[in-house]
Amino acid sequence: PLGRLPAGVKGLYWDRTSLKQRIHYEVAEPPKGPSNSAPVLLLNGFGVGSFTWHRNMAALAASTGASVYAMDYVGQGASWPVDCDDGNAESEQGLRYAIDDWKAQAAEFIDAIVLRGASPDACVHLVGNSAGGLLAALLAAEPGSRVASLCLLNATPVWGSNLPGWDGRLPGPAVPRAIGRYLYDRMRDRANIAEMLEQVYAAPEQAEPLVEQIRAVTDASEGGHAAFASILWSPPATLPGGAGGFEALLQLCGCDALLLYGADDPWCSPPFGRAAARALTRRACAGERRTELVLLSPAGHCPHHEAPEAANAILSRWVKGQPPLASADAATEAFGRVSAARAQSEGELEPRTPWEGLLTGMLS
Image 1: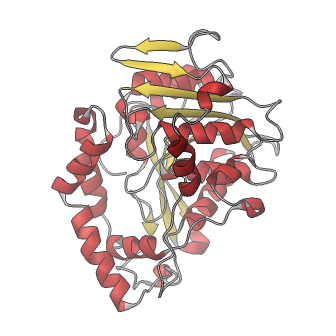
Image 2: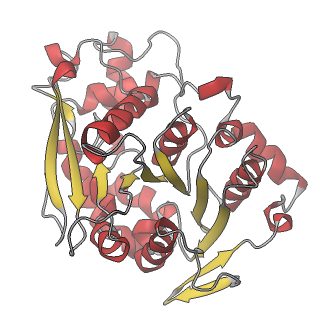
Image 3: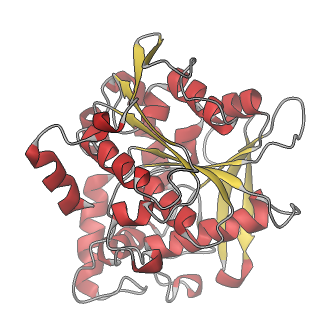
């Protein structure tokens, strides 16, 4: 693994031998040893890795008694094809860095690592941030999925651009590869990383360690330029059951669902959280499954990283089947400088302006 791991977190590798890929993952085990609690899988956003969960993993394992996993998607963090060479190696031929491929990796990881040796009816709690939120929803929406509950942290409702001229499978044409190389080097510039994080964190000082961590993972592989080009040209997710968008996808999820959103996120803002909550309350199983919306403020796009005390407490309660706030009837709770506000009625989920419903519908 890249860099020093926090206490209680162990870095490991899983070899996807048939695909010639080496996948980096991390695990935090409960201090008192294995329990009967369903494990937790944390799915990060784009351009980072499992290190964005370092403020959460050991704390969640200790408070829930569950094993807590985080995994780098192939082409991100420290997960790469073996001997990758900017899209030219044998292990990279035909490879595409698309969300469908990350979904297949995550599903295989759950079976091969997270639930290895468990009974056929064993399940996992999924927690996804940003693009990882969309990935978690895609997994939970599959018929017969092994998902105990779903938690979305400022989930990205769409992913994939489907640009013309290439389907994203390596090796790519010269022009897309040149564009990908140029943009990748601009994106991973330290000043640009810092500027982007400052835009999406309510307290930018909380993001400072990420600048060097993100830069380090982009420097650690020979496949980054080709991977970025592939990501740019790869298609959107294939939605289960012919779902017509993110909100329709959520209605296929048959498990309890928590929406834990940073209220100060300029990208996946509270209107998107409310839209997702409305979709979840319209599920066929809505009368049997919990749907909760909690907003954290001040907190932005990565509330687990920016406000770990609040996120860890709420996630711990959620995994244990408890109300997300300290009291079942509570509307708010304070966690130091951060406050949590829980929606207590369907009326609180409705659009605040006529434009809100239109905007979220167009982008979901």
